[in-house]
Image (tube, rainbow, N blue to C red; front, side):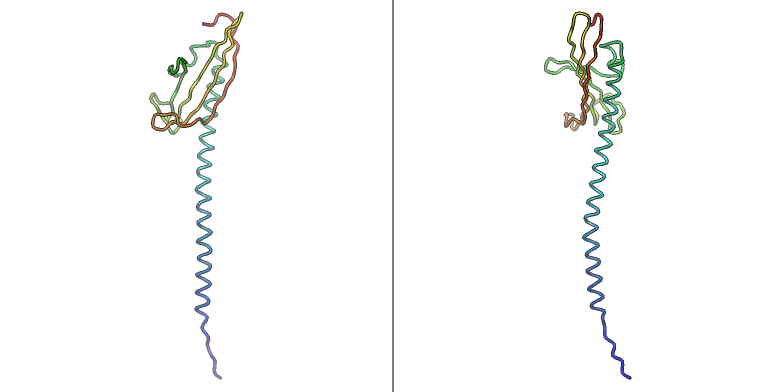
Length: 153
């Protein structure tokens, strides 16, 4: 009996090349997806920490009996621009307070509207990202009003 062996090595090789090419193309899309999820996670983490800082400062401002001195007690510096005073505090990339310009900046704007028996104070708190010593984008902002009765300076 004569057996004839036929070789299918060429077909198997072609199937392997097609399968490997398919997985290589799919892996490119998967890598892009993983890279974009890291960017989204980083932005969400940054937003979360900005919200926590802003809400913490706002709660302190609303709870403080001293309408003017609470921010300086908390380490904020008073600056002025365009005839308007504001208070600022800087944070590094890990959200630790720094004495100099850092990666993040928390700014407090306040306006007093005097009334007969006190004053209505409007607070606006902004958390921004800082690049190259310039404000490069607001991450989060928060505003609230507080009424202070009695003599307010």
